Image 1: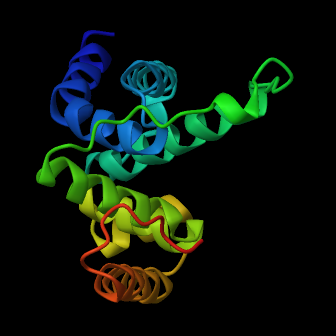
Image 2: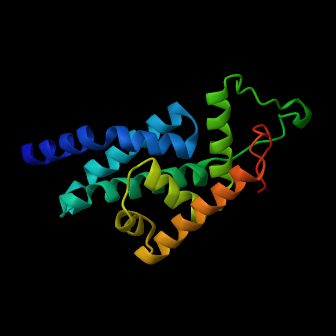
Length: 172
């Protein structure tokens, strides 16, 4: 039991920040990201004996986190009847140029199709290699590399189309 505890604590120490960054990118909410990471580590604790290769720990944890995020939508029932659609306001403050550029970049990344967005976020935010992304997404490495290439090109095209119009919404 002490060995399992040490392995678990080492995983938390090494991967907590990376998992949180990835969870925040997925959820765009600090509280939800914290919950996702906590649930990820809870599931990791329960299944720690199934992790044979410590070198695969990062991919294993990111896969658990992705599944936890998906479960969040399976459980959630949205009720839109109480929301007046005419009163919805974007309350994000984009007064500073840096914030505005980051917001535009995030919007364009989030506008990418899932097949391109997810590998890009795993690479950029979680620092995963092509092989790790392939393991996490159950794809072959060549497919991942192609999707990363296309994601970067789509971002580049979107950002160079109208570089002076930062407030413009991306084309979906």
